Length: 121
Image 1 (spheres, helix red, strand yellow):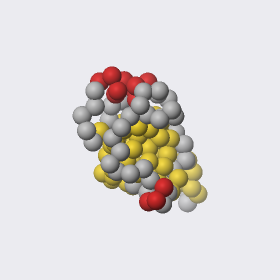
Image 2 (cartoon, rainbow, N blue to C red; image 1 turned 45 degrees about the horizontal axis):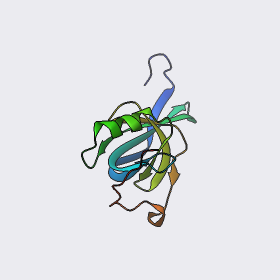
Image 3 (cartoon, rainbow, N blue to C red; image 1 turned 45 degrees about the vertical axis):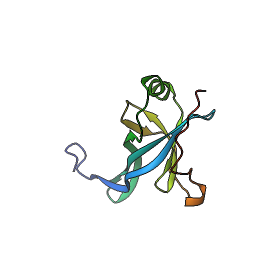
Image 4 (cartoon, rainbow, N blue to C red; image 1 turned 90 degrees about the horizontal axis):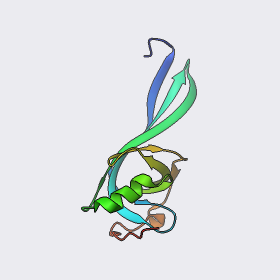
């Protein structure tokens, strides 16, 4: 319940926990991660409203600080895994906000879990 808007409620519409995925950027850079993603939706008087999503991640393998800085400096990143693909922006090394639609994908469209390579763009 919101004290300023007593008829406003927030509900969880999607929860993806501790899933393997690939964090990538245009130009071919990619690295293996595990991530959590939560999607929330405001509901006022029974009417669905604004949706917003955020998450946390951790790198599967040790990542050199120069590579981490490349990811932090990119404004357009993509996470694929957990049955979804979406655009994200990193807030820091471990957290992100979703900046695009969350698109369901089939397992055949996902990037293989063994992917570890990256390429600086």
